[in-house]
Image: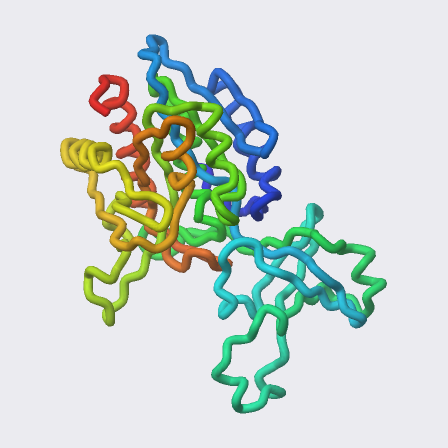
Length: 340
């Protein structure tokens, strides 16, 4: 498992190089072909000793949500804009790093003591926030920061409670880590791994990756929405932590292939792997571009339930991670037999 290294790397959409370089190095000697395409996708091929000619593509996106510098004011404070979908309610006081040198900073705002009463109940707009790097003038800040610099959340990987992992960018470094584990395993199968770019800003890399691979079947590995509280009925909970990988039914970009989904369920049950359904149509992932690329292909979404997604810190269950890995390995074996 490579979650610590992957989640502590910076890879805001469009700036995935640090993540890509780590994955590329980790795969040297484990796959037969490695290439980076013109848009930045990392595409690898692990060949089978006896290939059927059918292509299985497994995709996971390298990018994470984050921020970008858009201005520096006269006092040296940095104004920014979001990259990807960010809940602005959770930004105040968060630690960040800026640029390739990972300059530390903190997101600030007017303190509550100076706010008017009618401001207390309002969510601060991003234009009301700034990043403080400890400088006192625009000139000082400009020595370290430039317009267009990427800003990532500064969150350390940790393991807490009973088999719980907390980190940033689990959407979708959890998918990247599982795909890495699979490609480094001794599985004997034709697998095309696609570590894609810019999923968070419109599924940008997935289409070009699928166009190059031309898969017969594609599996998208994701970290997905997880939210379970006592005030919700079970049908309102998209996924639950610890109840296994989540199989997608539909989202805003894909109606998932029913035959492939049924086969995945059969495989899970035959191998005593717990699973659940992703019970929401909200959101989307790289399948939205993959399943309609070229002449199209059967696509499935298999996700690790992730609490507090699209925030500076998310949470997953190690058991869900392990069971997702087991399910994908079992699926690969069935693909080799021609069952899917």
